[in-house]
Amino acid sequence: MSTVDIQKRVRRWVESRLGAQAMARRERAMRMLEESLELAQSLGVNEEVARRLTLIVYGKPPGNYRQELGGAALTLLACADG
Image (tube, rainbow, N blue to C red):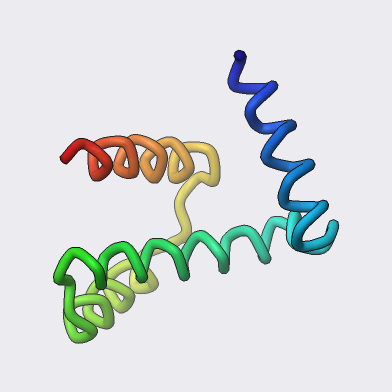
């Protein structure tokens, strides 16, 4: 199954369970942030560290969407190993 096929299946699932509005770019970003924070919390990252990291990230100019997406995907796969 190709990446495009997987993305299409995910889109259909999200829209059928959460509605089409859940696929809006900002909504997806907020859901990704929430899930990332929950993952970090479950792995022992405390709130103070998360707050400091947020200040560091928002203290810099926004990155390129595609480059940041690639970084997030790579990091998720590395995190899933173990």
